[in-house]
Image (cartoon, rainbow, N blue to C red):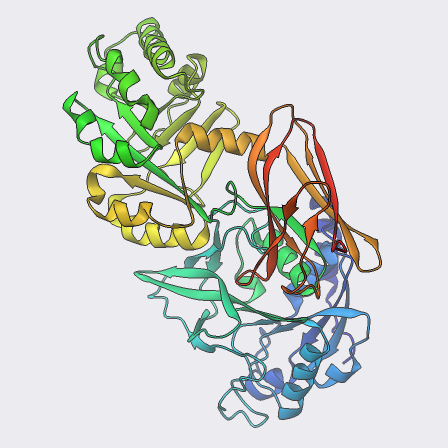
Length: 533
């Protein structure tokens, strides 16, 4: 069948979704492959096997240009197709494998989902051909009866554009999930499932020259996250080899951020961080609001090593009337401001912190963030638009080891309690790719970064123009830009004309990186890639 039939109800759903969701159309054509051999060999009597139906719904709702073919029609794929989606091809003939390999060699980007070529034309298990899936084996993931799992997406990659650092994507565990084992060569994990004490790659990319392959260990129907469309759009665009430019989430080329915090209950607690104070300029102190008035005299001595905030004291504030609460909060903030000059002040608390009256009180008295335990869809931070506060989520102690590795891998935020880490903190601080910062530093960076915009367009044959703009009056320092140009290799030396800055090729990312020391208020920077010497 050249075109897979869509039932009327599905078509109506597509038409309705077009009113509900904006179009995310990319200017590339897609071929969607229906696995007819898999259906005939493994699911002949299973009416629920519809692996391409969800893809068609997605393509139609987003107005993507695509064509539909059977798996025995791979040689009929039109020349204008740049991306091929191959869902649930569990059974494949040798001819199909050869044709897919040729399509990859021809520069077509291929997305494969789930188990692949596990069976031959007779339904017998085979040793899967690594000519198609180089550098890893596909394994079935054990779910321990879980209904869903989280999958972290690597930060600051073409797949994470528009997502928060450390973003978790929620996946249904039915049908089975698969993971990549024995990664080697040019196969790179773009994220990991979080299963008990294991992290298993569920998205893998393979990029050699103009050959691009992407593998999902799950089907489209298992993506039940609000960020589904963003992940799919990013993946398809990467496979299409369209040029891409985007900002690194953190300053410079940092892969993740580290926030060190310490609770202060008595004056001697200041001294217990003496070693850290001499080593790090990014500590976050949370001080009891019950301190005597002479304690602010100590603030100035430690403010050079970090920020000073308050630890919320339910017992204290529950005994105060509204006016007294306001007065106490204002006084503490003013004392901190006089001693440190920091721009943002916050409170920390253990347990859930969802009292809207307290949120309103904090905003009115000049506080800008809350650091508390609570559920978050990423180890990043959220902005509470109702109460105008930034919300940071303190990890549970029992999750600390898992959170640490996941945050580092995914490019998120690593919160570190300096009282509970001991000597482990020193190995973390010597990491070559972490940004040690304060809560106010995070907020200031987020506010400045959101005012930056970047575009990349085809300027002339073989050249692309990159345009960077600061849409605010405030200067932005140390912004990092990633640039991906199709067929551009690491041997080409490029400098940004008129700016004296050189693009550096990152072999692991297969992209160029540009660090901009300063982007002035309302400044625009434009340059062409590649530039001739």
